Picture (cartoon, one colour):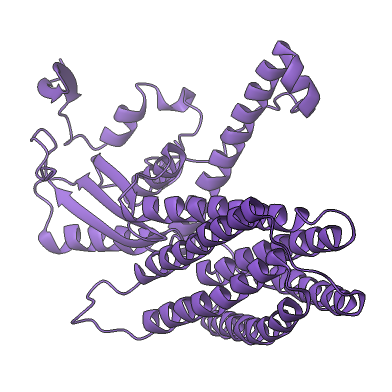
Length: 417
């Protein structure tokens, strides 16, 4: 007879009873836990000395239906169902691919296609170069747009110029954030300064949203008073030439910065993309206002301001979520669980797996159960080895592994409100 323990746990207003198998001393315990007949269970390696491991080689996802066209998904109910099925199979394929990555980490102790130290130094150098190029270009383009604003007196062009002024300020904020993160201070900042990255981006986005509100007010005032500047043909040509050149340079910088994975460099890429949009709208509405209807200029400025507020409000929300400890997606937790189970054959239970945001990366907390009679030195080596494997994942900043000898106790840490 299998010994069973019933654990009672309160979940909301209800009590839940959970039956738990307490066997952990059997030599083949892990196989028994996976299946009474493991040789018939796909994904379980039952051959050789590694029969305790899960194997990804036996996991095959059948081909699902192709995703139907967008029009069919909108108007046909059957196509919407087919689309959901296609997304499900795609999700399973990504999960199996993630298991393969975890298998590589377990076998080689490193991420697949991980860059060497020299490659990492070269990448960091390239990221710094991208930041310096963006800042230098912002200075030059700001001077050019100031001249275009003086020549045209267009509110839409002035809005775009003020945006460039804030680019300089926000660029300094992001540069300072990147610089501060690279100067370690284990006494004042014992877990590093990576939280400075989302904080810097939030400050950056807040400044951009403030600009949008200011332009909205000024554009509304101009529409209400019907006051508008007059355009001269010669000055209009200067404005068009400058704005087209600025837009082209910003487009090239956007493509360049998007080639990096660093969050700060990608924030520059988003800023350059935003400038391409605002410069284009500002130029088109200024020309239309000069040649056809004067009110097109403040309307263009309102469009720019609305886009500014919406874009950077979304950026603020995303980075706030990264700081409040939101959990990782279930698929990611599944990948981590796969890695933990295949780490060592002495792991009897995986009690807890948590991954939550604490900046741009995850903190991971894991509770594993080892035999109670295991020497401390061996238990330490198993836990430390698992921690090092988890911290190899690019999404993980820090991992904490707690080793226990049983799993029938209540949670040891209570959430403080």
